[in-house]
Image 1 (cartoon, helix red, strand yellow):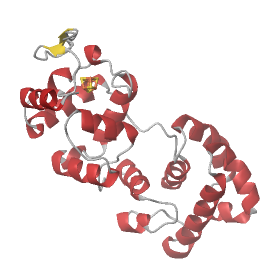
Image 2 (image 1 turned 45 degrees about the horizontal axis):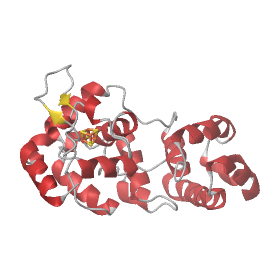
Image 3 (image 1 turned 180 degrees about the horizontal axis):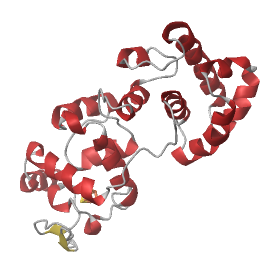
Image 4 (image 1 turned 180 degrees about the vertical axis):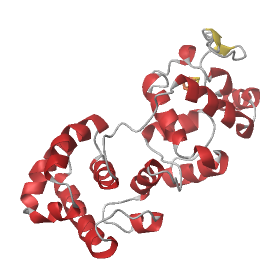
Length: 241
Ligand code: SF4
């Protein structure tokens, strides 16, 4: 998109501070089922699932953890087997050696410092082996006290397309989003963007003609009319000029 066109498009949709709430509200209606796709029943299973989800799909993780969580119920269970056995049990999630090492290191700290429980404290989570900011953010958000905004590939792409950030680095994108998104929405906002990214705003072929926030998006590829609840915001395909 040419720079002058982008500038004009940004001017047309208005400042991001005025757009953020309607974007959240419309996406919340459109994707009322948006939630974490990982399956877990406890903070420990949540932590393990998120750690295993690096570089693979949630579907793949769920397939592995369905069996894993039958065998490994407590932190001690991850240390009671030879590391090779744990590696075999998580092999299908990829990067199994590094993940097994991180899991065992984390379990040892949970046992030594937190009586086998997953700590609530964000900084304590960050100190666990293999737990980076994104993992700590997901765990905190799912436990009801989000400390930041999860930035994955969908959140990054949509935030850029919506003009909410011009950054490329996930840490800087998160900083921009924390300034923009109301704190009470920090947990659900990433889910809304992730589901919108999967269903509508595809990386290669965004379906702008089916997008409920097209009139709020400076990257929209279609002409738009003002949004009416329940009615698509788009009106006509883009001219070829
Ligand atoms: S209008 Fe198009 S680019 Fe913008 S969010 Fe919707 S699908 Fe994505």
